[in-house]
Image (cartoon, rainbow, N blue to C red; front, side):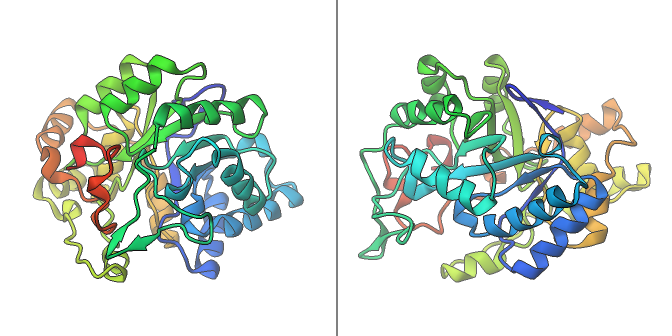
Length: 323
C-alpha cells in the first residue's frame, strides 16, 4: 500500500485510459474486481467514468464489496484547470461514478485550456489548442482543498507536474498533496522528481508503467505517430524475467512496486489482468534492481509529452521537464 491521507492506496491499480469500448471495459472491470483489484483509476476526460460507476454499483448493490474497500481515483480535466471550475467538474465526475466521494482527486495537468466548458474540452483555433494563460496552480489548489473539506474527495493530488510546481503547492497548501501521478517505467524513472515527493511525504503513482505499447491508435486520431518504447523486449528485462519465471511485464511492475511506487497498468485482457496482479510473490535482488536502474534513459525515455495537443508547449505552466 502507498500512503495517502487519510486512506491507503493499493500499490497495484487498474488504469482505464484509452478504454473507450464500454462493453470491453465493463468486462475488464468485472474481471479485475473478481481478481482482487480495488484501486481503479479513471478521469473525466477519459469519458468512461459512467462505466466504472455502473460496475462499482453492481458490486456494491450485490454486497460483494463495500465502499471502504475501494480506492477510486479521478481527475480534474484540462478544461477545468481554474479555481471556479473545480467543484463543477468534480460534481460531474461524482454523478458519472454514482458516488458521494472519490478517494483521490487529481489535477490532471498543471496547464489549462480556455474552454467554454464540458462540451468543448479541447478548444482548437488556427490549428492550435487555445491555452488559458491565466492558469494559476495555487488558486486551483485552494479550490481542491475545498472539496476535501466538504467531503467530496478524501484526498487530493497532482499529476504531470514538475518539481518546481510541486514545491509551489507545498509552500501554500493547507491540505498537502497526497499523491503525484506521472509517467514512470524502467526507461523513465524520474528519480529527482520522486526525491522531491519523498521529501514532502507525497506518494508516487506511475502511469504507463509498461511504456503504454498500445497508444498508437490514440496518436493516429490526432494525426501523429507513436513509436513504442519496446521496454518489454529489452534484453535485460527479458533476462531477469526468465531468471524469476515471470513475464517481462511482471518484472517491470515489480521494479516500481518494490520501491513503493504505485502502478496502474491498463489492460482489458483477463490473463494480463491476472499477471499484472501477481507481482507480490517474488522479489528482485540487489543486482536485478541495479541492472534495471541502469536502463533509465532520462528525458529521452519519456513517451508522453502531450505533443498531440498542438501548441500546448507554449503554455506558461507547461512543465519545464517536458519541453
